[in-house]
Length: 384
Image 1 (tube, rainbow, N blue to C red):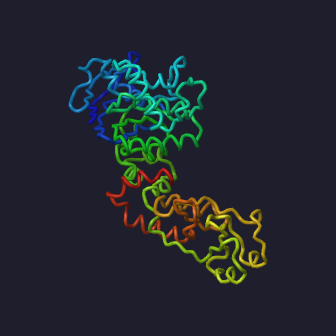
Image 2: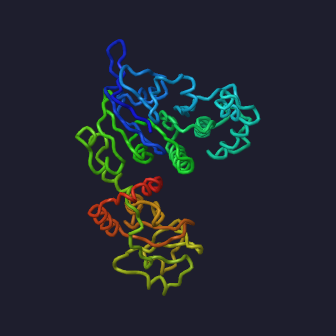
Image 3: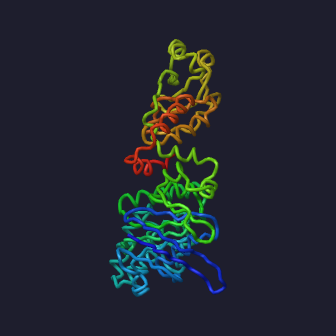
């Protein structure tokens, strides 16, 4: 456990970056520091590896005061990932990753073997090993940065806004990769971000800091969203925190219907039998059961099933794996007001109306998110 006990950082000009901060960061978890600019997030992170020395207070790791440890050995015992990866431009990818093991005295062959192993773990093709950083995309470079931080198998991983410089699609992929790696390796990760959505998505615990480096609230994401400590936290979370909270409720309880679903080769009689007053549109699937789009029943009966004439089916969700937030998103994005549920192979499992999703949301809020399911929900919410 990392324990931050009444730590402050004051600079000679009188600026207070961190003010009497106390946190207990649990082992084998992702603790996210989030807050507005000037709240001391990065300063706090850098005090953990003594890139910045605290003005007062103590930081201990497993009961050992880091201020009494040699600074070089302390830093080599931690992985450190920064924005834009911070790679050595004159070294190949494999040698970038092997940097810390080589500093620790590993042989070149052993260090490079470890680097290649980690390339596979973070999703980098082995063919990239002999390339240089400038030959990689931004997302690939960030993966190299994560691999380099993991190279010596450190128990602690510090990450300072590592994904903020890449586009949203790449960022989502990197977040998913981090959650996968954490599920496999169980590191103690301290992660800095200014993005509350990223904090909610990744964090086991989230520390919201105020300007001036004071702690506003330290709680699991679900608790943060359901019970903000004060108006500052509530405002920082934004007006859509209720939507974010739906990420912690599974879609598994949604009652799906298959009545308004027809295959592209259905007969006029089959199409007519599927039309109901509750479902004014029918979802058309291909012969493998994958969604193609929505159409009015009378058009289908008349043989008008041309794909270009179908209404888009919105964003499907995986029933039971994705969250209620994903199901609501699918219903809102659909021009018919119905969300499409699919299985892991992308085949239609059923459809659900906005009304049914709304009823499920009311039931979920009334019941509350079971504590035992919150960790599972955290792992699932990447898709939500």
